[in-house]
Image (tube, rainbow, N blue to C red; front, side, top):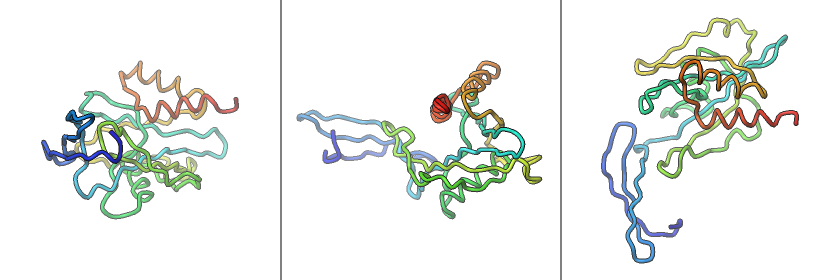
Length: 198
């Protein structure tokens, strides 16, 4: 199959957050069926933020959240984020999600690749995500005692971890001590930190 293959869609189930569909197409005169999920109409994508806490007199840290995910019945170590609301830019939504999930107030980092869209899991979903690095002033009075403002169904814990090569070890220690899972995005970021100063 390629982008020119003719296909028809069949809606199997329409839920609040996801639609389950079948994609029917022919290859070499044989009908194929692909199962996938799709976000409902009005979907504007998701947003994920990589929050860096910067201090004047000590090394910078990174904020990672442990978000309880019902499908796996466990907490998963992730970057803060969520769906983009009907109003506001993706950047504004990212700053808001960080504030709600962690209590921290941040500003958008002047990162040159800040408008790149990534696909979450394109083999089974049409979901996509904006990704932003944000700066948190760790010395600011507003970030000394951050208070979450979670929705009733949210269950999120906040961790301040080290940047650099020790991040992977700290993630694995949390996984061992707390029986957490680790998201692919966070783990790949941690592996990337292994290449700093090589």
